[in-house]
Amino acid sequence: MANKRIDQPTGTETVGHEWDGIEELNTPLPRWWLWTFYATIAFAAVYVVLYPAWPLIDKATAGTLGWSSRGDLAKEMSAADMARQSVFQKIAATDIEKLPGSPELMQAAIAGGAAAFKVNCVQCHGAGAAGYQEFGYPNLNDDDWIWGGTLTDIEYTLNHGIRWEAADETRASYMPAFEGVLDTAQAKAMAGHVLSLSGKGQSSPAAAQTFAENCAACHGASGEGMPAMGAPALNDAIWLYGGSEAAVTKQILKPRHGVMPAWKGRLDPVTIKMLAAYVHSRGGGQKAAPAQPETQPADDVAGTQKAETDG
Ligand code: HEC
Ligand code: HEC
Image (cartoon, rainbow, N blue to C red; front, top):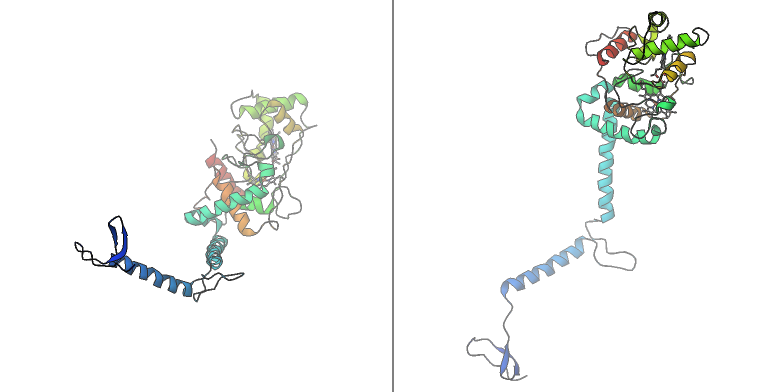
């Protein structure tokens, strides 16, 4: 240990070890390394004071800044909550026909509506909103609207339901049964006329006349349908109850009356608005007629819209 000496060629002190003539030099640490080392010590000291660091038995020292990862998460969550709240409020405050004018809100509404649809509507309308024809659950993706396809129409349908007796303002109209009015042969001929409106069946002058007298009041002279009456278009090959001759004959003799619950009261108004936006976005959503004066009778408005979209 005592044979420390200065190494001649380098001028550095040796540590005093020697193995077979090889000596270890006591080279000092480089400056930059030393300062970095001191800096990390200083950083650690400051960190321990400011942040949770020192493990105790059941927790760690809190740190003078009061930061915690849980608190950080809570802050982020409440910020996201605030953002969602304000989107909700904005949707609530926006007239439904004005939603598309604000693409950001419309998108948020469609997303919210899609989520609510999965919970409330799929059992009847199907996951893709394609409906189930055999049960008279309509396809909501096509541009064929029984009760009207503007955002306002759809919102109304959702609020008040269809033939939902518990709701005062429910959409309601009942196709009369023609059993007893038309005999079997006449009913078949009538089915032929109905199918001919979409280019399939065989019409006859007698059936065409019966149609004009008994059916046109609701379904329109050429079967274009009438949303104000909830009478589906018969000239578009889109069928609520099936487009076979047998299905059409059955509807003529013993019509079915589809029922949908009213959603007002079960779902909050914003959810209903978002559902309307979602259904509207599925395809074929109609624009509100732009220049309609407010005093125009409702069925006129509906009739015009229908005529515009068909064909
Ligand atoms: C119990 C079954 C059932 C449920 C649940 C249901 N619907 Fe319906 N829906 C129907 C039936 C049946 C009709 C067709 C009524 C008719 O014949 O006019 C209909 C019609 C509609 C229409 C009118 C379509 C048109 O062409 O005018 C819309 C829009 C609609 N449903 C949306 C919804 C939404 C959104 C939900 C979920 C909140 C929903 N429905 C839940 C059975 C249901
Ligand atoms: C009072 C109005 C009214 C009259 C009159 C009327 N219908 Fe209807 N019709 C309706 C309504 C409403 C529906 C839809 C029923 C439903 O949604 O469940 C309908 C449905 C139908 C359907 C089923 C359409 C589909 O997509 O599956 C056919 C077919 C039909 N009507 C044919 C006729 C024929 C033919 C006549 C005349 C002999 C006639 N209707 C008279 C109101 C009427």
